[in-house]
Length: 313
Image 1 (cartoon, rainbow, N blue to C red):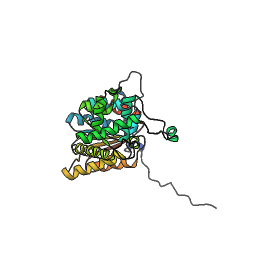
Image 2 (tube, rainbow, N blue to C red):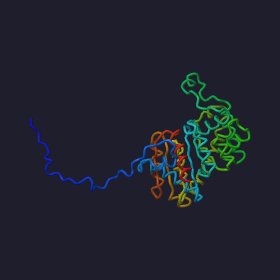
Image 3 (tube, rainbow, N blue to C red):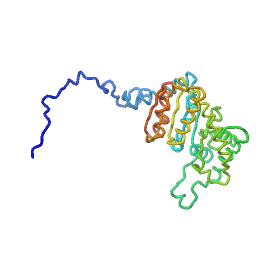
Image 4 (cartoon, rainbow, N blue to C red):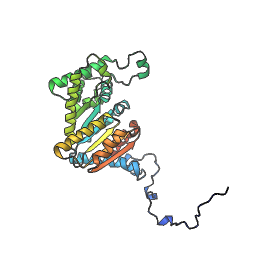
C-alpha cells in the first residue's frame, strides 16, 4: 500500500556560513606536546563547556583568596581514599581553602592514613566473618575526640586534629585533620549516627557524638554566612550528607542576615547525584552567583583543579 510522503521541495533553507554557532574553530583545543606547562595545557583546552567551567571555578577560588572571602571544601570519604588529602592540605597551606567540612567517613580514612599509613578495608571479605569495621584503635581515637570536644568546648574535627598532632601520628604530614589544626583553620565534622564504623564500638558515646557534631554544624553555618560577595563552596564527593548540611546552614544564614547571595558553588563527583545537583549547584545561587557541575574521578579531577588554582593565582 502506498503511503503519503511529505514534500520537501519548498523547505526554507539558509547558508551555514551566515549562521550563529556555538562551536567555532577558534574554540578548538590544541594537541598536547612534550614539555608544555600546566598553564599552556589549561589555556589550550577546548574553550567551552566543562573545560571553561573548571577554569572558572579555579579563578573563583583565587579571587576569593585575594579578596579575603571563604572557600569551603566539603568532602566525602572517597576523596581521602583516592589519595587527594595532600593536594587539599597544600591548597589550605597556600590560603586557597579556609574551611573543610566532611562526613564521618572522610575523617575515619584520614585518621587511619595518619596513624597506620593505610585505610579502606576489604568490606566484602570482612563482612562475611563480622570483622568489618572492628578496628579498635580507629574507634578509640575518634570516639574519644567526641568526648574531648564536649569537655573542652572544641569542635569535633578540631579535637580530632589536635589529638593526631599531640600523639605525633606516624604519617602526620599528610593528615588533613592535623594540617587544619596546625594552620588554625576549621575542619568541621558532620556525623550521621550509625553511618561510620566507629559507631559499632562500645566506646561510642551518642550524646557526645551528637553534641560535638552539632557544635561543628554551628561553626560551619557561621562560615557559610560569610560567603556573600565572592565566597566559594566546593562539594567534593559527598552525595548526601554535606549537600544537606550545606542547605540547612544556608537557610540559617539567610534567616539571620539576609545573605549570602553572590557566591560560587561547584560539585565535583564521579556521577552527578540529585542532592548535590539541587542543594549545591542550583538552589543556593538562584539569588545570585554561579553553580558548576563537573564530573570525573577524584584522583584526576581534584589534582587538575588544584593545578588550575595554582596556575591562575
